[in-house]
Length: 102
Image (cartoon, rainbow, N blue to C red; front, side, top):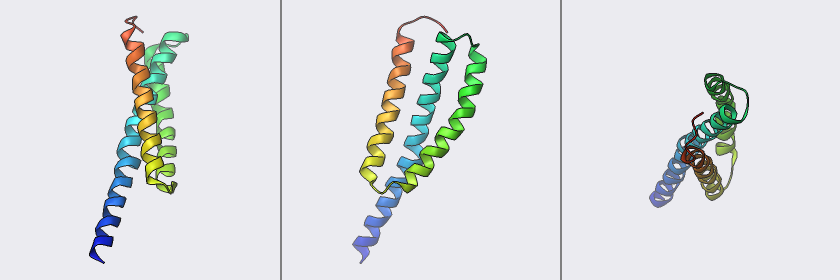
C-alpha cells in the first residue's frame, strides 16, 4: 500500500514539473523565437514585438497548462514539452548565431 502511494506521489510530482516548469520553458522559447522573427522579418520595432509575444505567451502558457493536466500519458507530456522547448530555443540560438542584429 505504501509503495503505491509513493509511486502516485512521484507521478504527480513529475506531472507538476512537466506541466508547470517545462511548459514555461517551452513558452518562453516560443516567445523569444517569435520576437526575433517578428523584429527581423517584419516592419515591427523590437519593443512592439516583445510586447506582442509576451501577451500571446500568456495564452500559449495557459493552453500548455490545461493540456499538461488533461494529457493522460505522462511520457507524451514530457516528450512534447521537451521537444517544443528544445526546438524553440534551438531556433533562437540559430537566429542569434547568424550575428545580424535585430
